[in-house]
Image (cartoon, rainbow, N blue to C red; front, side, top):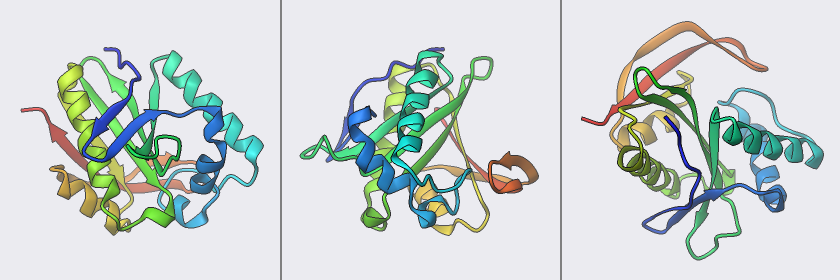
Length: 180
């Protein structure tokens, strides 16, 4: 299974490849401690760290391991508001995992549900993916609301199931969406 990185437009949202020229906008997301609260890793303190991150995004896409799209408004395609990540491609069961993060300035404005719907439509229409899943820390109420809003079903709590960088062994709540 291969995912082609392309532009995805859905309602007023554009999902596009992240480039080195996006360093300032990506920095606003990954340097914010509040944004990183419910994500693996810690806030990135330098622009050099962001350059390494973006280069890692490109390498992952080339290796067909993970894909990262910048979330923009259609009217402002050069300003990244957030990021959607598709990773853990499992060919045997035709599944992927989904992650996302948004600049704190845009929280609560309804952007992420639209972006996720665009990504879901893209995955189900252009690939053979049958299952999309997301892992959420139990205390991340807002993320659980967003996932339910776009049709995901809560499958349950996996206790001490994942090792997240800077957070150690964590419990995660699994949500999924099946093509059928």
